[in-house]
Each structure stands twice: as structure tokens, then as C-alpha cells.
Amino acid sequence: MKLSLKHPLCGGIILSIVGVLAAGCAAEGVNGEENVAEASSELRPEWSTTPVTVRHDIDAPDFKTLKVAKQSGFDRSTFQFDTGIPGYDVRYVTNPAQCASGDPIRVAGAAYIQVQIQPANAYDLETEKPTYSPASIVDVKPNLASVKQLKMSCPGIEAETSYIIGVGAKKNFRVTELKNPPRIVVDVQQ
Image 1 (cartoon, rainbow, N blue to C red):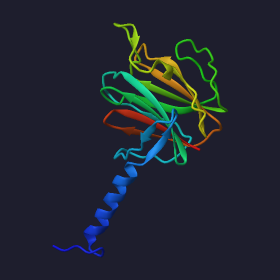
Image 2 (cartoon, one colour; image 1 turned 180 degrees about the vertical axis):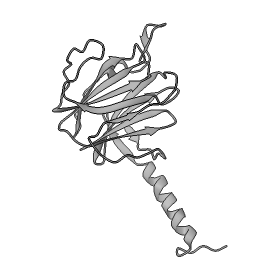
Image 3 (cartoon, rainbow, N blue to C red; image 1 turned 60 degrees about the vertical axis):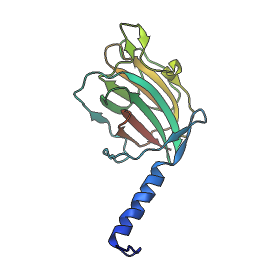
Image 4 (cartoon, helix red, strand yellow; image 1 turned 90 degrees about the vertical axis):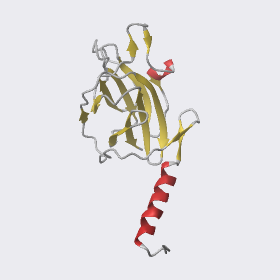
């Protein structure tokens, strides 16, 4: 069978090749490392400032790491887990606070996005050690176009792990789930 560019299959093949190439485009990471942008078949919600709440009925996975990167048109914060994607609630808050005490916490930025992840362990009660690495991800200051600081506000001792994302101004965000490895992604427009 001979295919020409006018053949109906060629359009799909060309789109597939473009999709593969786009999925391999690199983004600039906080420490100069490259983070590969990944295509996902998961729901891609519209940009909004509206809270996003999703519940997943799973055993609490361990929180493994946090990555922050500048992308084209937005800043990306990626929360990675070991065995599955937990539930989450992502929303703007006016007064960032520690989850247990309610004490205020200082985070750089003019607006604050709270990312509550539950169930998710960030601390192993048996080993008395964090489940994540490096230890420095409890307070990250990437100072990107939108994302200025990420600070852990709930250390995951009772299967809740939370972060406050300090942003320069209240901008639209979106939340996406990615697999292999399991991740929750919060993108904030620049």
C-alpha cells in the first residue's frame, strides 16, 4: 500500500510524530536540571482560580519528592508518590497556616495556593524519618515568574501532606494527574 500526504492515514501519522516530539521537549528546572514535559491522557482542566478537589480511595502512598520548573507560559510544581495518586484539594487561601496548630506561616508571594494531599504519608512513624528526599524540599524558593516559594505546611504524620505555594500575583492554575510514577501537577500561569 502506497501512502501519500493526501492519504487519510498520513495526517494521523504526522500528528503522532508531532505529539511524540512535543512530549520530549525539555523545560528549565530550578537547579538548571532538565525536566521533560510529559503528555498525559488524564483530564486537562481549564485554567481557573476555582478550587479543585479530587478524592481517591487508596491506601496512603508515601510522598517521595517535589520538583518545580519553569515551562513555556506557566510554572509547574510536581508532587511525586510511590504507589498511587492520593486525593487532593488545591485552592487559594488568604492566610497560610500550619495544619495542626493553625499558626500562620510566612511564604514569599502576594497570593497563596494551598495544596492539601490526603491520604499521603511524608513521615514514617516506624523509622522516624521523612519518606521524601531531598530534605530541602520542605522549603523551596525557586523565585520563578509566578511561583516564588513552596513551603510544607503539614508534614504528613497523620496521612495528610500539605504545601503552600506562594505566587507573585493571583493567577489561574490547573491541576493534572500523571502516572509512572504517580504525580499530582499544579501549573500556575506566568
